[in-house]
Each structure stands twice: as C-alpha cells, then as structure tokens.
Image (tube, rainbow, N blue to C red):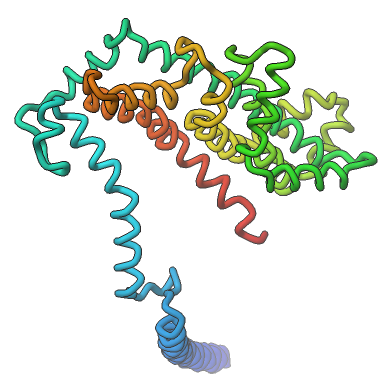
Length: 342
C-alpha cells in the first residue's frame, strides 16, 4: 500500500514538473512574441518620426537622421565664427613687413609670434602690461561685484516676500530693455559733476550693476533652492546669512558661473564706456589701448605696428577662452538646470 502511494505521488510530481516546463516554454514564447511586437512598434514609430523630421527639416536627437541642408547651414555658420580667429592667429605670427606683403590666410616668411609678444609687452615703456592690469582690475572688482550683488539680490527676490516685489520685477525687466550705450552719456554727466571721471571708479561703479545677471539669478534661485530646505535650516536655528552661505550658495553654483561669465565678458569687452570716461592712457583698458595703437598705425607718417595690434588682440582673447574652457561644465549644467521634470 505504501509503495503504491509513493508511486502515485511520484507520478503527480512528474506531471506537475511537465506542466511547469510547458508553462515556462509558453512564457518564453509569449515573451519573444511580445518583444517582436514591441520591435515592430518601435520600427513603425521611428519611420513615422523620420517622415515628420524630413518634413520640418529637423531630427529627433534620440533617433538622429542627417539633414544635408541643415548640415551645410551649420558649417557655413561655423566657418563664419571661426574665420576671424584663424585669420588673427595666422597674422599674429607675421612681422610687419610680412603682414603687408603676404596673403592674409598664409604664413609669412618667418614665424615671429614670440618676437611680437615680447615687442608688445615692451613697446612704449610696457604700456600694454598696464592696460592688461587695468582690465583685470575692472573685471575683478566690477564684474566680481556685479556677480555678488546679482546673487544676493536674486536670492532675496526669489525666497523672500515683501511689499513692492512686483514693482522691483518691473524695474528689472525695464532695465534689461534699455541698452547700456543709452546710459553712458547720462553717467558721464553725473560722474563729471562729482569729479570721478578719468578715474578707475568711472569704470567700476557702472560695472557693478547687471540687471540681466540679477534677473538670471532670480529665476535660477526659484528653481534651484527648495524652500523646504531653507525652512528646515531655520527650524534648526540657522541664521539667514548662514543659510545663504552654507545651503543656498552651493546649490546656486551653476547659475553663479553663468552670471559671472556674462559679466566678465561684458566688462572685458567694454569699449564705449571707457572711451567717454577716460582720457589718461594710464587707466585705459585693453580695448581702448589697442584702438589707440590701431589709430597710430593708420596715421600718416606714424610707425606702422599692425603686427603688434594683432598680437595684442590675440593676447586679449586668450584669458576669455581659458575662462570658458575651465568653467564650461558648470555653465552647461546651469543652462540645462530645470530642463528635466522630476
């Protein structure tokens, strides 16, 4: 009796094993069938996306398809942007004689870049070094101060509620719409009344105001700094200054870098403001100083120094290129912040 019972149970186990094996095979077949159906749907969707992209001239980044017309247009724009830099680099390697006697996109008979650099820094008693230091002074104090004020002002406007907040927003938007050149003459008249024209303050004080940087930090602070995090810090007893410097400031680093780059480039390339504010060449920035050299080179009877003007221009843009390359990852993350919905 016992033997028959064990034999029956063994048979039942074999039956169950066979059924489970069959069900597993069926599951695999069903999975393969579902995967084939999914691949067909994906292929159909990709074909439809390609048709749509071909009509509007763009492609889906996740499903790229080359557009000949767009590629040509992008290549033309790239050449347009790179061509002046290539021309500047090539002609900075020439002597004055080669500059006026050789093809613009061809190298001269001698590679004189190092001689040009040395002559640029020693010409007229080393005035180029003074212009470079002046520019660094205006950038560090002016652009640095503008960035700091934009950070603190944008954070306050984003995270604090007070009467007149909407009016401040309207003033900022209105300030962005007014070009800086339109304010240069009124600023000159005002500074001349208080006697600070032809001084570094005439360059630094206007550079401290950056409406666009303030607006940018306002919008970035709204998205990057959670209000709950600030409330938790206040509950723990942290002061507003400690909350700002230890919690909010690290979260704002991408926006800070973006704002700093905008203000640095604007101050470094500023031309019209120092043109009307400064008369003493000892306080010139690089933009005005190189323009004076260029005028000298084009004056009848003066010594032609186009090679020094070009070499100085090349040296002028190198710090900006270094700044962009060093801060590129922070800048890109700042531009992409808020693009993904959580």
